[in-house]
Image (cartoon, rainbow, N blue to C red; front, side, top):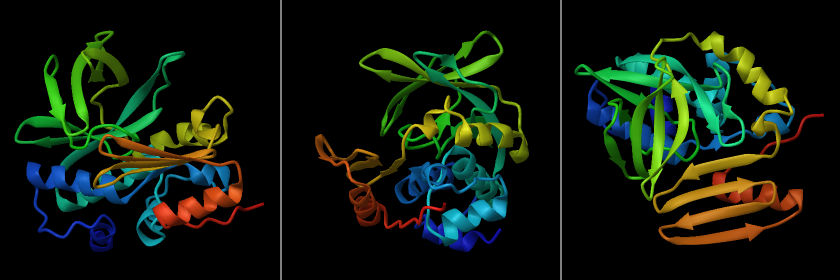
Length: 254
């Protein structure tokens, strides 16, 4: 994998080295320049876990992706730079359904100086920087507060804390996984009516002042404490906002 175009894609212009500082900056740059999106699912474009195809989509075509693509590709970038990383399987929490299946989510663990960090550029609104995996400690992040604990003895769980209320995000084990192990669930999330990814189009990205999120019916633009919501019903308006805010144009395949 040619990492220089990838670094240019995420607008990372500093020297690269295996360090906590660089790891944190790479994640921040990724979140601000590569959107989380599920658009291919709604435009009849199959997503396969082929790293060359994912690289072409995200780096060359300047698109985004969902967890398998974003974290899968970011893992390969970190590995190429020299970081000690592994892909892990997460089970995402839903208030109505509990925890998802194995391989429901792909995330990364990076080890630096005998400390493990949860690295995730593919979970939509989550942490801005890698999270130190240490149970029972309230972690402060630019996007909020997080805490790790154990679940059923076998799993680690990452929680978001808002107003002292802790909400699970997902559970995971620290076992390293291969990219192709996620393909079955990647296919499930593209095709099943039980997957929330098939319910509506979503694209979202961090900005310097907040976040922009576009779906089938509205565009939500957050700047600091201010929020603007643009509502619409026409497909042509979605396409216009997609081009305006994300510089993406997609032709739907029959």
